[in-house]
Length: 599
Image 1: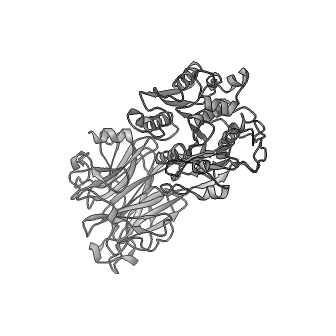
Image 2 (image 1 turned 90 degrees about the horizontal axis):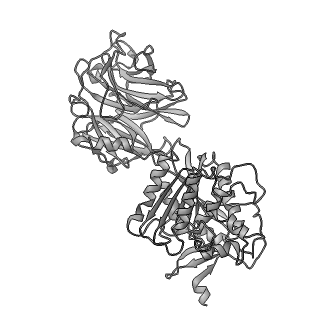
Image 3 (image 1 turned 30 degrees about the vertical axis):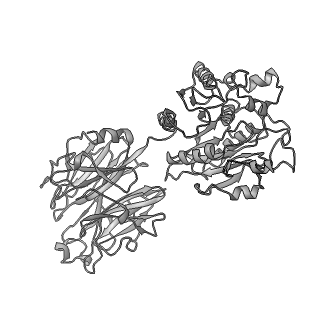
């Protein structure tokens, strides 16, 4: 009865069905079709170790290795992947604290995580228990690479993280990746980077964790085997870049394990970083107290610095206020919902070009040259648009007037210009709405002062020379305020139907295989029973979010969709600075944002 209080026998099917209440159920897949090196033992059953409250906090006696998938959702981006090796002295797997919770953290920084439930070394189920965990770790890395396309993974950015004895397994995978421990294909088992958290590294007496050593190597291992699995002695110039985290007061796994591995990396000129905290003891997971709480951020910074993940980005919204006389305003958001003005909602750039010297409808994108390029409406009646560029959104180039409609004498206006960069052609397409008197008589009306817009465009590589202006979109109605985003290998145009009689004044979408068109027939309205204009769109956490100006209500609204077909109004969830008008949304790196915020 005493043992029953400590453990709970569960079959594989039940194990897969149980999840901690605070965690969402994730897909779990078997690691092997046929487990290598296995001895069949029907009496050896998988168990949960229970805590004092009777809740499972670790797994033991694993016979069927699995991967638990936590896939990051980054649109159009190949994600970095990390295999997670929970600790537990090679006797159990701390699958929640050093597994699921680590996966959830990795997801927050855009990494797809894979919690490895590896076999724990045992003579009862393995012909050679010293290689059993390594077999599982190598296959986990290979499996992620084989499924890179299916899981949207960059196969050149597959790393491994390990805790305690899981750190020994991760460092073994990082130094023994060429060991042939089972029959496999030619897929590489070398991790591209390692993160070792209070790891067991050495099997040498006086420094090792005795429980891990005995469980893996047995009670009387040979000196040859001890040296082989003392991974500080197996480091070479090809060992993956590594970050190590340890506490000075670790009473279970001496900090010298990390120090000696770091020194071996340094000697072999392998990129390495080490964080040793004053306290924290052993097994602190994501942290308990004190400075070691900062280790996840240290790892994130290291991953960014080594280009394994992109730098964290912040959402920026460019907009104007009033009639656009004072120029460019900027706001920021970290979640896409709450927006806060920068520079106390004062102008970053005062307009200088055009008939009326206005800066309405400012649209900003980051181009292929690393610069931020902006176009805007300069006047109610001019035949051109404004343009400027900046490296940091603070210091701008000399403003330029681009006479994109000068060739059309009957042009009444050039409004709401937008700009999109074509990565294939390395060109920028600038597009806008204009009314040319006498054009498109079939939709001419006396409403709205007789304006009858169509979308026009020009292309440029350098903002010095421009292709001849052409029509971009004629949907058969008065159209304005188009903005275009790339979706996988296609383009989606969000646009405003400006028709007043019968009244439309709503947003619609159209699609194309090419940036310059042709675009499909406009969809049914995607906005509700209100007048909407000035759409701008961005992909956030699996949703397309479209912000727009509810201009009769004097406030901003938003809708979102996962498929660009079914839309949900989320206007009540967003918050913009008072007086925000017709803006554009884009992302900037955090280091650029920090300077912008302090400007």
